[in-house]
Length: 189
Image 1 (cartoon, helix red, strand yellow):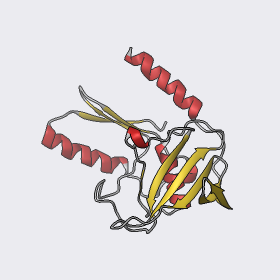
Image 2: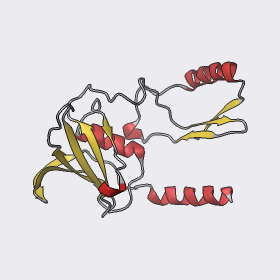
Image 3: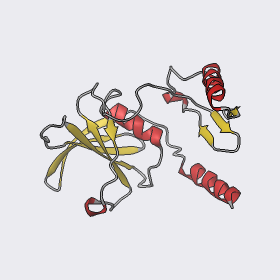
Image 4: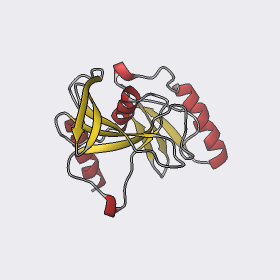
């Protein structure tokens, strides 16, 4: 059963892989929609509509990004969401994707919404405090889970990827404290 699910997932992931090369976002102007004004950005894969969220007392200013694929398919790639946020707003602006109460749900199209702090350098009081980015490695815990990460696209590979050696040192330290048997498998080949 699990093998069937994994094969189905692999087929879905291959079908969802967007073959259109990524291009820079271009601001194509303002658009009025349902009484609100949006700046509209396009690239080869996505359309992003950006509006300022009305100020909320005691909160910093937010931008609302309404994002859809140009082919209207489902969006499920976290790295692409991060890249959109970075390119349209900024790499040091934090954002969240809200999963609302059912009473506030809006689900009428294959779109997703990010709410991004308008000012860079402000952090939410939750989330990780440091940066760790890797690619093309599976971390397997004996008798447990496997952590998988695919390689980056060549045009979006970070310069500060964690090396295999750094990851091996972190795994060795964890094994010392936990007694777990952990292996590292390269998937970039």
